[in-house]
Image 1 (cartoon, rainbow, N blue to C red):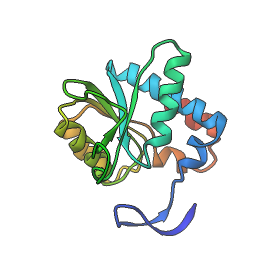
Image 2 (cartoon, rainbow, N blue to C red):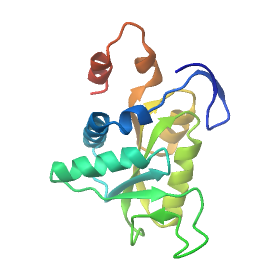
Image 3 (cartoon, rainbow, N blue to C red):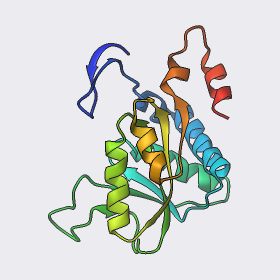
Image 4 (cartoon, rainbow, N blue to C red):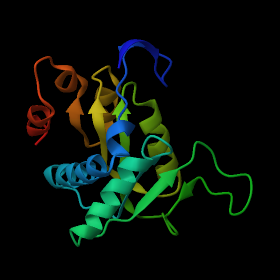
Length: 178
């Protein structure tokens, strides 16, 4: 979507990338899952689980775990709340019964400043997870990915520049992501 928009980071932008239009579409979710698993293979990581900050990472994680089962290489998922629940087991991370020592990949839909992704990383590390990879569907190339790369094995499936390129079909954009 083009036009002035305020991003979750608080930054202003003249475009918005609504990844949920893809990740919550049946075919888009399937393709997202395959792209995530392919990217993990390219990164050379073998995580015990994949997760990220709710709500942005929810459909990405769900797509990846479903496709991992289809491909007979099951990869459990987990979700990170903005803050721990105030009731029940008072957990911030859902889906991992014993996170300590788990090798995990943190996923997000879009990386701008990296703030949301870093929140999920921090929560996972507080619970004793080892973050062996960080991925996003789209890197807006606005500084966040550089910060993440300083400490983590970070990759994206697409860049905003690729997706916004004029005269490019979606198939051409997908071909560049491989």
